Amino acid sequence: MEDKAGNDPYNQQLPQKSRVIVPSMACLWVLAAYVATGTVTFVTLEDWSYLDSTFFCVTSLCKIGIENFVPVGSITDAATDHPMKLVIKFVYLLLGMGIIAMCFDLMREDVQVRVRNLKMDIGLCFEDIRLRAVAVYRRRNSFD
Image (cartoon, rainbow, N blue to C red; front, side, top):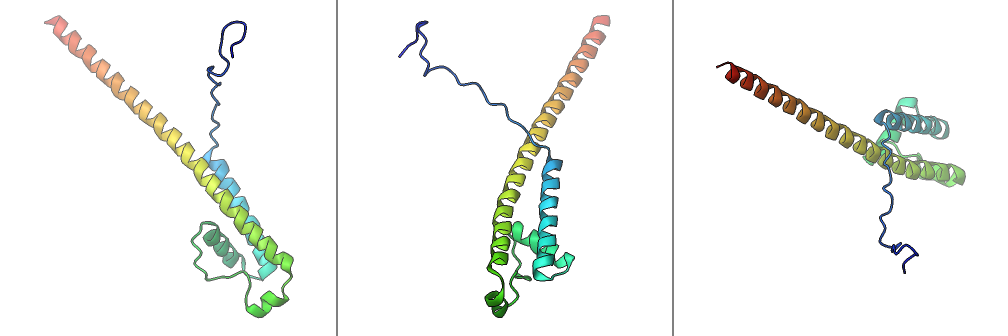
């Protein structure tokens, strides 16, 4: 199917999407805020210390899961505990693993762009040095 100008609309190139590179520092701030939110949540819900809550959040979200701390203290606590607390803990950990994975991927892209730019800069520096050396060599030979 062609339009009046004879162009096939299906063979036209789609415009390239521009990629937005998120700064690594923004990702680190998001991660720190999410861990801080979890720390306060587990201090409130589990009566843990801030250090224990932070340790649990970091190990659980990074999929290390050392299991020194478990959100429900014992089976009797689980039976009497409010089910909404369990849902809050589950949603925090599930959503957090997605946020961690997303931030790691964004930081990986940022590092790749920076390394690519650094390689180009180093290549330009070596090319500049090579051109200067050639110019000096030609100048010396032209005097002889």
